[in-house]
Length: 120
Image (cartoon, rainbow, N blue to C red):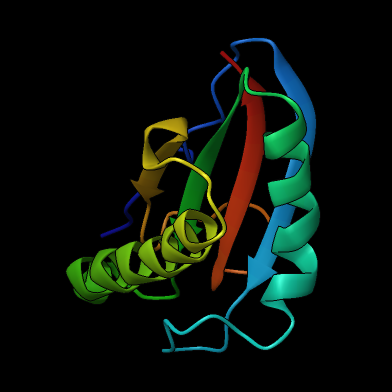
């Protein structure tokens, strides 16, 4: 029996600035990879410059249909790791929306967190 998956939700269309940063994670891991700071620090600087910007953290994890719950939990753990780094660097949690999308990645690698900068 074939199953069709619904397309992954797209970032909010609220005047998106078009900036997306992708953090790739090793399979099965939720700790921030070593190169994450180099990718996140410019996003932090941009958010500190403009208080009208927000972030959507869209997290994914590899998994099949049977492991969908596990994939969603792993993607949530990844998003929360990125969120914790941002909070530790003085970005308010109220400026971030976390979306744990599990194994619903249609484009790009399955094991990642995409940070999408949007205007309020």
